[in-house]
Structures are given as structure tokens and as C-alpha cells.
Image (cartoon, rainbow, N blue to C red; front, side, top):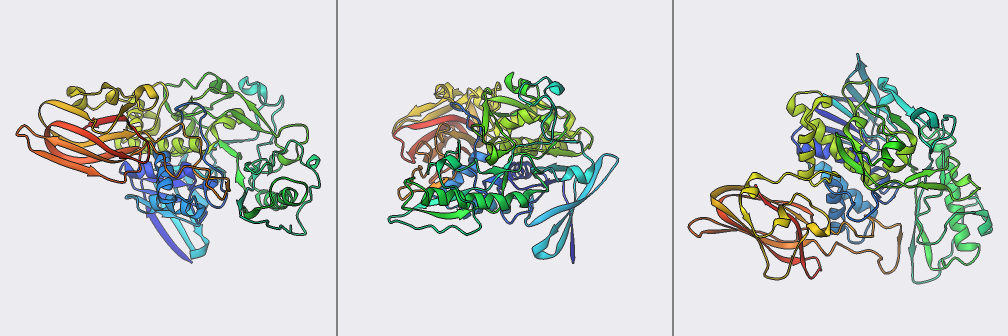
Length: 562
């Protein structure tokens, strides 16, 4: 057996969207990071192994930005056919090519050296390479979903539903229990131009009539999330047991749709079925603060807000597929957005343990709103940025300057409800042809500059000044209705290939006091947040849009000079 050792500033366990975003954020802010993932691909429930689309906050202009929007836009650009393996490669490419970041795939953490409330190292087993990897670090982030570091370190955690009385909530049962939301194996279908037969395996379950699937929406545009089990079992140790049952159900449901009545599925074929269940809930850490249903309903007005949620409190019945008394989930209303604090991502009893994703310190009721992947992704980015700041300030993460963290996150295009981003002093000191692009509010129609061919945005400085770069926020249509990936494949694609509102080609002109002009040109831009290095002296700086990805008007939320 081979043994390898790594010395890092930050070790992230779990390569779902929360872990990936945490690792990328930390590495981009200059700290040496190791990301350990127990699967061959990144993305967790969003990966090709599970294939759940990325969901987040409801409501106008509430789509999550930052690294998660960067990843989604990268996928739209490089993967127009929406192939799941290419989506995997987009995530992999971002990680493997990121400076300061080492990724260890196919590596399962099985041990931790922890004493006196401090983790010294973790060890992972990489089975395909017969190698043990041991990572020492200043901070360890558990983004594994199942909170693997909890039993290995003695960190406090919760499992199941609290009693109503514990936090004064109304959603939980009267008596606490060990029941959770379950897990699902999804399947995908593809439309063809001819009738396709389906022969189910003999071990599949049989559902002869629609009455055998009460309250189960099995229209073809459904992603079959309700094929769910495990909430009444152990959502960690019974995972394979759940998979065995879920696969039988999946084949049985498709057999029903194809062969038991007219469901309009003659020309559809079963293209893929998942053998890795996507999980909703298991262990949740106990942090410096536990977010409750009451916090959700109050809007999460925390001083240390660093991210937000906005999914409904979507509380699936533990029986899942076997629940027969009505719809398999209850949608309790939740405001959108509502804030999440840094404190709910910091362990209460392990000094250098932090976490992001569905395992943050929340009650079961609050989890039902915070667990979706876009929320997990922005939590990850916030956490990675916070750890980088703590190391830079040489202080405990509990003591960092929260206002500075919020400013950094907003500069990285992470929206924080109730906060306005500070504008660069250089932009503030100059005359600007549009106040909209420097108001610090980078979403919402009222904060968007619009123009047509020949229009531009101009800064005029009091005197010739050194300009290091320009920062721009384009409009990627935060109100688009389609997901990062489809749940089915029709003959004619049902999704846009790329948001038409993004400006693809533009030019920045920098003019000095002598009238000399330097041009900085970009083509085929496919991102919302863009930095353009300039490193020149200028008195006048103009941003000139040239072309979009299809929209007739130019739309820009922010343009700054730094």
C-alpha cells in the first residue's frame, strides 16, 4: 500500500457543489487547499451519478450567483447538448486547473487525528490507487453531506426530527424521533422518432394501474423525485438497502408508464437509471448557532449573514414512496430570500471544524428549506472565503471581521440580502455617465443599465490615474426558468443554449491626458462577473458593448474601475 502526506491550509471533505465551491473560493483567495471526494466525479447530487438539477431560492431576481453561476454558465457554453458527463468535466476542469487546489478523487475519509477539540489530520483511502492520503491543515471543512467527520472527531451532531417543544417550532412532531427525509434514485428518458418497446427486468416491481401509484405525478415532464425511501430507515448505513428497493421501483414505474395504460410514452426510451441514491438528509452538525423554523419565518435577519436560502420548507414524509395518505411532501411557506449566518457553519465543540451544505447547524424544519444545492453552493463559497480571511488575519474564524467578509463575498458576486456592495474609491471619485452601474446593487431591473448599438458607459477621472483593472457584472438573466441540466431529453431541446442577455463581445478604451488610447477587447465572453486587467494610466475609461448572445439590447449591472 502506498502512503502520501499533504500539508495544507485548508482541507475540504466532500466534493459536491458545497465542497467544490468552498475549495475554489479558498484557493482563489490564496490559501493552499486540498479537496477530498469519495466519488470519481465532482458535483454530488448534481453529478452524472445522481442527476438532480440545481435548485435554489424562489422569487424574482433571487437566483444564486458567484461560483455557482460561473459553473452553470460555463456548462451552458461548453455543453450546449446538455450531456451529463460533460457537465462533470466542467466541474472537474474548474477544480483541476485551479491554482492552490489539489483534488483527491475516489478517496474516502476513514480516520481523523483529533485531540483536545482540534483536528490535526484526516486520512482517506483511494481504493483504485491502493493509496492512503493523509492531509494536515489549519481548518477542516466537512461538506460530505453525511458529516463523516462527526463520528471520527467526536463533533456534536443531530439526526432526525426535533420535538416541537425543543425550539418552539410548529412543523416538527410532538415527540423527537430518528426519522428523516429519504433518498431517491432518479432516471432519465429520451424521445425518439419511432415506437420503442420496454421489457422490464423480472425483479422489478409491478404497478398495474394509476391507483397503484396514488398521488405520484408520473407525467413525462416530471423528474420522479417522489421515488424516495430511507426516511424511516438509517439514511447512512442503509444506503445500499435503499438503492436496491429504489431501482426496483424505478423500473416498475417506467414499466407502468410504457406498458400499463396510455401515458403518451410510445416513442420514449429509458436512457439512464441512477444506482447512487441522492440524499436529502442525514447527520446535521451542532454549530455555534442552530437555525430554526422561527429564524426562517423571520427572514434570517442575522448580523453575520453570509448567504441566503429561499426554497419553501419542503418537508418530505419519512415514508417517501410508501406514504399513501396524500401528496408525499408538505410545502410550508418560507420567505425568499432568508438569511443564513456564519455561526451555523462552525462546530460548537471542535475548534477548527467547519461545514457547508445540507449538514449545517439547522433543525429538521429549517433544513427543509436550506438543503437545496444552489443554497449549499453559496454556503460553500462563503465558508471557503471566511476560512481564507481567518488565515489571512491570523485569527479564529469565530472572530473575523464580518463586514469585511460580506464585502469580499459581494465583490465575488455573491448576493447578500439587505447589504449593498461598496464601490471602489476610484469609481466613486470619478464622473460616471450612469449612476446605475456604481450603485452597489447588482440585480433587479431598476439596477440595470440598458443600451443599444453605439452606446457606452464612461468614467472621467479628475486627473490621470493608474488603473489596475475593470470589474463588470453582465446580465445572465437571473429569472430564467430553465435548470442547469434537463430531467428528460426531447427531440427538440426545451432549453436555451445560453442566456441571450449576456454580452459576448465588448471593448474597454482607456485614454490618457495626451489623448493616447489603449484598447482592451474581449470576444465570446460567457460569464456574468468579468475582470479585465488594464494596468495603465488613464483619465477617461469607456466600456463599449459590441454584441450579445442574442438579445437586442445591452444590459449591464455594474462597471467599475479599480
